[in-house]
Structures are given as C-alpha cells and as structure tokens.
Image 1: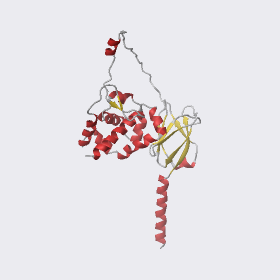
Image 2: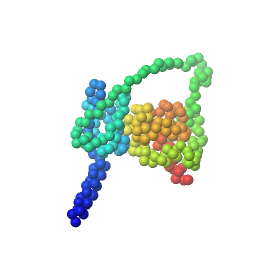
Image 3: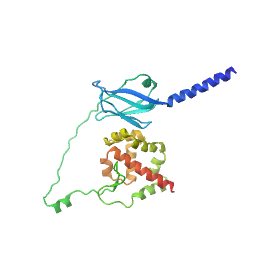
Image 4: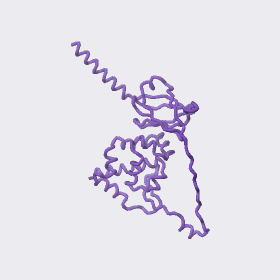
Length: 256
C-alpha cells in the first residue's frame, strides 16, 4: 500500500511539472543598449511560440504572455536581432535585462541616374520602363494587381503544384502545417502586423514560419508573384501573399 501511495504521489508530481511547463503567464523585462546600457524604446518583441507581440516603452520595459521554454524574438533597426529562451527565473524576478548589440554597416556608393526626358510626352512615355508584373496582394485590400497584364495562368501554377507530388509548394505547405497555421494568428495580432509593415528583411517572417528566405521567395515565385513585388514589398505584404497562396492551396488540395 505504501508503494502504491508513493507511485501515486510521483504521478501527480509529474503532471504538475508538465502543467507548469506549459502554463502561460506575463513576463516583464527591460531591453537595453549593450554599448551604452541605456534603455531602448520601441523595440519589437515577438513570442514565436504564442504568436503575440509587443513593443518596449520609453523606459525600455515590456510585458508579454509566455510559457517556460517559449522563444522571444527581439528586433530593432540598426541592432542585431536576438532570440531569448524563457526560463522560470524570468517569471520569478521582474526587470530581467536583455541587451541588444548595434550592427556595423559598411556603406556602399549609390549612383542615381535620372530618366532623360525630351519634353515630348509621346516619346517620353515610350522610353519609360514598363512593369510587366502580374498579380500581387496588398494588406488591407482583398485583391490587387501590379502594372501590366493579368496572367491567366495564376491559378494553374498552384493547381499544378498540388498535382505534382514533388513540387515545392506541396513540400513546403504540406510538411509544415503547424507553421502555416500561424499565418492567421500573425495577421490577427496588431503588434505583429505593425512590426511586419515596417520591415523589409523577412527576418521576423523567417523566425515565425521557420522557413528560409529562399523558401519564402520560392513560394511567391510558384504562386505567380513577380520579382519586383518580391523584392520591394514589406514583410506584411509578403505575409498576406503567402497566406493567400496557402488558402488557395488548401482549397485546391481538398478538391483533389
């Protein structure tokens, strides 16, 4: 009987530890400049596991929902992005300090060449470069198109990807259902949307979706987005484009 109660006690202890590891709570911490030790305002903080975001205030302070072993992603223009694993100590002790390091940029020479205009509208219009891109998506709009003609095969590329088991879209979408489910969560969090709208480096998208930058470009290429859109769109527009492509992928895959 004694052995039975000891075993029962151990069982419930293990359950308690498991629940403790997954229970979410609020973390409060401070972000500082590693060089000056001064607090940093407006640093973006994203919980990659819970898919929620926030920013630091004028004192460098922030609070965010998290659980033990979640990963927090910190990013700020001109500073090296950093990932921090959440520990029990971060819940026990407030005002944990996180330091970000400045990046060293090597400036390159940029040559700006204006268009040579003649003053004759008919001639100048013909000499201006034409954007032959096709479909694209803009956050806040349900549908949009780039300059140029609409490509009639926009859907057939996605359809062909589903019918071909070896295709890139099937490999990326089909084998990463958990990451793809984060797309909707990312679009619903205003802090994350604001962050992505101000970024063009795909860094946060890579961390949230667990994809390589090349994978993101391949997805957009296979979903008929032009190279000009891929290189100039901000991260929020890229998120909307991937989300739209994924929703189309699910619909067509369901009809197979």
